Image (tube, rainbow, N blue to C red; front, side, top):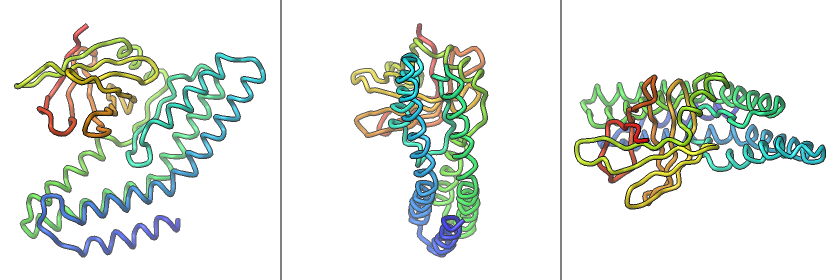
Length: 261
């Protein structure tokens, strides 16, 4: 509650600032405070989850249940790689072969979602107010930049999805290869491996991780020459093509992709 109150005070002061930049300084500042507020909430939750996973791994190892211990070990590695503290999206434990691991993951997801919802909802409301403010002042570029931020939040918002549905999507994607499609180029390739691993690129081959964030929706984290980029893909029901919501910097912007194998 104290974190939320402090966040409200900061956001209220930020809304008093005015500027005409394409991305107004209020937006940058709001985003930084929002991410900091989420970090304070999520860090102890993630630390607790990691500690429980370590204990569960030790339990399985001592009981000579090495397959289960390996599943837990993969989950420990997985949560280290994903920048969850700054981007809200659902985490699905693909390796839920044990009831205890699945239950731990489910409780962790629900606790994270429940804990950050007030901060996320407040951030969206303040963004909407800020966009309205700039639009009324005829700062249209700034208003559009803020609306784009709201759109990104909607694209990466946490969505409930059953473990059965997550496994169905994973099965559809694992060991598949895809081509980006656009007016300029279609040479960039994307491949989905197991355990959320993948590859992306053409001339360069960048390591990539992928996570299911909703029905037929996948978020990619691409370790490119521009740093870690995140891209949201929406697949058709037959998993033959996808639409792309955003794309790494300094690249031709594709609108979609198609299955190539």
